Amino acid sequence: TQLLEQSPQFLSIQEGENLTVYCNSSSVFSSLQWYRQEPGEGPVLLVTVVTGGEVKKLKRLTFQFGDARKDSSLHITAAQPGDTGLYLCAGGAQKLVFGQGTRLTINP
Amino acid sequence: DTEVTQTPKHLVMGMTNKKSLKCEQHMGHRAMYWYKQKAKKPPELMFVYSYEKLSINESVPSRFSPECPNSSLLNLHLHALQPEDSALYLCASSPCPVSINEQFFGPGTRLTVL
Image (cartoon, rainbow over all chains, first blue to last red; front, side, top):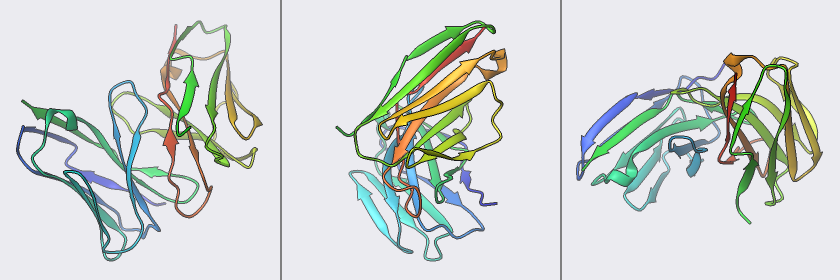
């Protein structure tokens, strides 16, 4: 069974700080997705990483896929209150496996 | 149209009621999914439809009955639910059912069972 472990589970930082969220597995994934979810809403797809070592940028968010395609990270530069939400990594074919999520709070 | 829509947004039902959740997408996706999400947890997969055929049932109780009338629509029929079934029910779709599984989620239906 493929499992994804996210860390940290909770993170509360001040506006303007940088942060990194990790998503790790002992299994190889053909791709990993990152989603952001706000309370009472569905997850919104942020990015998909496919190639080992791949780096993708989405404004202040940088996503990296590990060389062995077993892990991924999300780095946010100069965090803003609008970045607050639940960040989920997910992977797998047909059956999407989700990490437990990182609940991020950016304080003004 | 690049979104998945779900109706209703909120639903309150008694344990003897019968209700249905609806999901629609017009992105030409050939796989559609139902998830259940409890507070502070990630989504849990319930059902997968691939090319309008049920391909995965994650041992979901029979009081939940999915239906895929066509490639754009997905329903979840509810009957004799229990209070512990209260949750956010999410529908999702993806362009391919295998390999790169990018799923696009609807806003969800918040279900409360009294």
